[in-house]
Image (cartoon, rainbow, N blue to C red):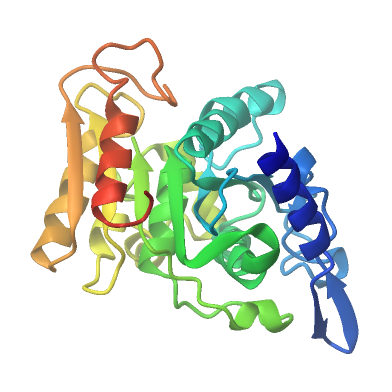
Length: 306
């Protein structure tokens, strides 16, 4: 208890960390011990602010560690759609529960609330890349190691995490010093991801919502199809999927891993013979529940966590 109290005091003190941007003082003043949201931008600086009423933010779940912790930015799924009454369930199932599980392994986590339709890829890509930069910029205040910042995503959130792994150097808005930070994840964890946006290999609602007006633009479809965007310098990743997934075709994951391995990218793949979509941590599911321990073992092999 004394250790945890000391960590909270440290975070509260560090939260006054300031930077100078556009002639104004910028502060990280969230109550980190209470999981208070950290906005990615000040409202007046939000790129594509007319795309959605949602203000993108990070919900912090900090590990109780003496040394700066590895961290994971967690992207829940939901087909890039406004889920209405189901929004909180998706946030818990594919955001908060994974974050808490990561905390138990001494890994900090930040659950990302990113924009969804009617916002499209222009705004959504800004959100994921900015999230990585925010965490790195405030690493000291957040008590995390900026060299160990991963992305984890479920379903459409898996697609978003994959896009960060492949397009970390794409041109985005420059609003302040935070945007000078690297947006390249250290590694990735993809959980039953929507990989491709190509017809026959995608989840149609995810494709439509993400691409918006560019849905029928073949260049945009190709650019944001994960199996076509692999590159030699993309981060290593762990991916798991079920052959019987009826929402996100497993063929996308198989094509992704084949393409990545051909480029020399380190991949750990777990393909299960049975199981469904949207299961989150898959607690009490005998055939799937081991995925998280397998993933943590892989991360330890990568020296991402102890």
